[in-house]
Length: 593
Image (cartoon, helix red, strand yellow):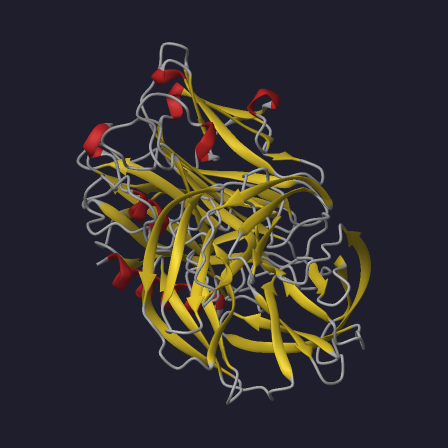
């Protein structure tokens, strides 16, 4: 039901986007200009009681002549009509002098549980916006606390966030504790995405009160270091069942260049500390995740770049994941092969003849159809035995730093270089695979536990499998569908359809055809064709090279030494950009993959 609603709400938002503007920020004219604030009202209330506290809408005249407000009309968009009401207004028609304003009181009195979406139309004589409109978004709840609280999906729907949280019945509060659910993403650590601070916008609190007077203490910390917590804000008991909750403290911070996570202290659970990083939740009966992360999608389905919704569950039974819900902006997940800092994935090179290894840090020089990149090389330790091949990159010890996976094609030995940035810190041996028909195709988090897993293909039989890993410990092998045509080879992995799951990139080494396996963990759910490419070109890996949090595809031409990157828009090629050429064909791009 909520998926149908999401489609309907998308149409609503598009209608608003094409309608009248809420305000005018240009120069004064010899005419009235209507400014209505806030841009939207978001409110919740319990069924069957009195109406909510009136919410104030301010209608101001930003022009130089009098503004005539002729009518105020509430239009129901979704839900039972009449749930939003005008509680107070000036006598109409009303004249608003330049530089002054009038107030309108709006109340929400729900008659049905669930989201209610309406629009306030303000008819005026302003030539630019004869009808200004603002969004009214309400959530009717069954009561206070427990299973009377609203579901996470209903909270998303009220905010017009077009994300399926994985709830089969949004009319009920509970949400399963299993992972992943719906559009959830495998993110436990963030980086600051751009200049300026990281911001946090609280969307909802539905949690018990405590004797301390606080529901939550919320903050951030450097990844892996809970001792360095820094508090942002607190939520008072009075706001324990609230959309758009008032908070005390800060809503922005600057984490610097390092990765960070979030935490919440729960006074109603004896000051239990809950973390975004699963490994830091060490209390008894902790869940696989206590914080879920979803992309922030507008009601038309478009994704707000570098913005995510975090949903917290504070207890270990009867889960709902709406104890605290907030949006984090100017934040992004750590990109693949993030060895040396910066916002883009690095490139990993190996010289099969000399044994030299090097890392490229890349920077975009231009954008558009002639996009290109510059690169700076950083030497890594050499490995003289040519039988050792770099076969993958991933964070195998969960220290936020990319590591390098190796396979010996003569002995079947496998090992991981645990890296500290661009410095080799230590090595860890993995189980050997003596059947040399097995080749490693790449790494990815296939079971959604935050650890890099290992993707294998047998070049003799066409069998495919995934090693599920707990850091550097092998847990289990899960078979994938076989591909009997041995011309098909795995080129890399990445979340190409932005559903939070690792997908598999394939290339046919005979025809030049390229394809994607779109996965739901270890289940193949669909395929997507990519443009074919001539056989001189080989896939070098998959990383993020335009900082859009989506995988791009690296290419190397073995005949000319040219290098390129396909900047992808999900499963569609956006722009092909050039990388500096490397004429020596002994050098091969070996990652990220």
